[in-house]
Image (cartoon, rainbow, N blue to C red; front, side, top):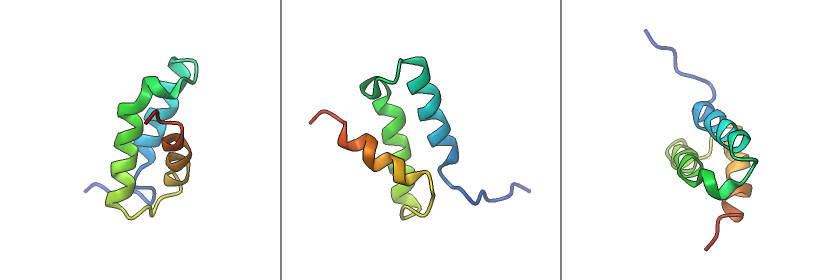
Amino acid sequence: MAQQSKEPCKKEACDIQACLTKNNFLSHKCLQVIEKLQSCCEKCNYNSTHCASVSALLKQKPK
């Protein structure tokens, strides 16, 4: 039986970290991954410590 993680968006946050590392921390190259974290955070009502970082990343997103 799979145990529910206390951190619902940890995988997405780790994916962003890996993507940023691979792309010299250019957040515009990781928008798809950042958007996955954003939608995860919306689903869990931002009830994850990993959701604090997504708002800062989204502010960098080109309009």
